[in-house]
Image (cartoon, rainbow, N blue to C red; front, side):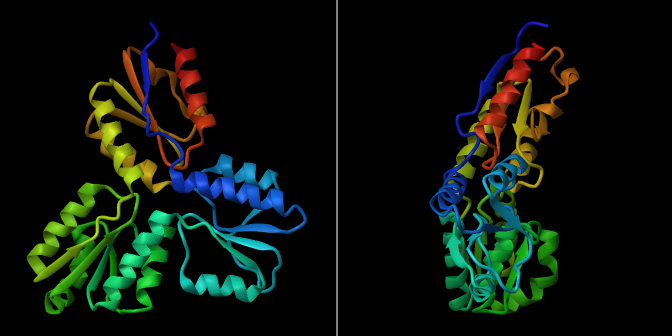
Length: 288
């Protein structure tokens, strides 16, 4: 087989929020070598990065101890106000590395709740970012729901109709298509629909560029964790454009897949380190 033509998307790999979180966590440990540095939950959805931080002495914890000392980092997905309180109460110094774009969504959701809108968060209910957005809005209203599909909205339709005004925010890594479907449906139910398209710029650019690349490629390779919402959405979107495979790293690259392929486009999620992307491209070249 001749070497395929490989094109790497410009908007592939770490976004600004992830880069900031990873660099700040490392710097914190460097500046506080004698202090414990913990992250509550995975800083980003990437095992290699979590292992690298672990090797530097930055520990990922999934539950807060009752008593602790040192620094506890709130990850890029954000956390509920209650969690911030618990961290302080346990005796930790809190360092908030919530992505600034995620903070904006939390703020918008709070404003809508305060102004008596029925709040709809377009996103995955069990995703940490969405849980934190909802927890923030819940402090100001008992009319806050999460949905990614019209079916998921159905149980609340009567409430929405009687409430008449609805405010919408979106998980930063969602697909525009999910937002559009839900907004179209809400327009049939409510008198007033106020929409904040809070999909972050980096996600929007990454999706747009990857689609363009997919149209001129026989195969698209999407690199990143299966836990990563933005990576999974990327793969989902591209499957409609061309043959697409979602891999976590180069070890999952199947040689059979590359047989007879002339052009390959490569993109990656916002939490995928450059080193992993480079290995994938090297392997594709090696197979060729």
